[in-house]
Length: 591
Image (cartoon, rainbow, N blue to C red; front, side, top):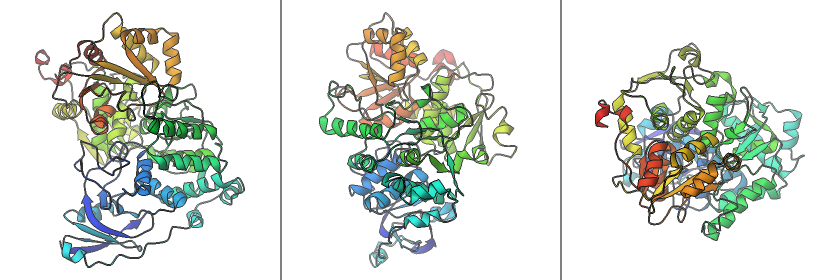
């Protein structure tokens, strides 16, 4: 290929040119791209170690965390963002980060999508020029690329254009006109830009919100929240807050650097000032305010979205950071995505193998991780667990790992989740677009990706990603009661304030404290670094498929993965077995 030109679908305005950085693997910006440097830190990704700053980044889509929008906005504003972002299919999380950077801060990042055929044609190209009219030219000839003349930057899309084709109620129009204040006016502009991108004909009422944008990714995330607050922003619906970047009540005692702790705490306070509840948990489904089946809600945080849709049967899109608070401010959401019944059907059918032994609780995060890799953007239905009766904790672990590797907003498990009494019901009577029969070898390969450490000596046992439930706290207390922690192995548990209070009332917290568990509320493992992660700990053990994926890039440590009982044993012995579980070994006697 010397050069070729194709027409892209413009998702944001602008023009750019630069060297092409191409991958056919989706990328989560949160936990996958360093917000201050633009380096790809997902150690499982083909682009690991590459720096996206100033390059035209081409990826099929995002995946994983809803905080990807915040990271993208951060790197746009700090000058470490790509020159342009080329996607195979529109990705609402990433596009939203670019829209907020444009509407609120006046900085533009061109984002386009090419479709499957066009995206594949980029393979092998080295340079890309994107014009403001959507024309994209790709070349493998560096000499020819130097002769390109950059097109003039496009002007920002006018907010009024966002209303085209969308029915607005008188109340919607009043907010858009600024009659309810600047914060709601800008929030409505952002929501309508996304509604137009999604093809939503109108907005709908939502009954509650869960905000993920309270995670501190840098100064831009704080500037955004403070701007909305200073414009007089107040939420219109009951709103809870995700886990934040520090334990707000203990961060100084934990040795967190004030240069990070103070703005992270201030960000959380800005959302509280706007009327959100200081719940500070990534597992809002454990709160008394958890939604009921069929309720229209706006939840962000990838594992919470997946759990709400799949296990609770509530209706929410996978809302990006910033869009969550905008919808909470106006109480209205685009009528699109999983708010529509027809968009909740499965298009991927996954059949499980017969295992040689009954699995333990590590099976569910492992399976979620692998099904997420298979699913991509497709909603899967899993067959083969009809008589397994997974617990709510199992489904929590499955969903968190699934949301780490997939961009899909939900899953179905036959005879387990409420919208899948049968595979045909989950598929809405239609044949699947794709069918896959999992093998035991695929499960083994995924296990080795998560249990990747080569050193058996473990310096830290990390639990609570997502936040533990009270039943998990009790199970851990029973495993540790009367035993001694290995002096060279720390054990840290993260959980929400509400669950911590429950565990204290039931006596489990006293057992955990007696063993030496460092119990931390408010924050989560995706934000914890040194000194909570001991500087001397070179290897981490976890039962979380999500954290096993992210931890190597976030902490620079090796990671072992296993069941909760394995983690408890490691906390006592300081060692990880490094063996496959019996249910993954053809001859369990040799596990």
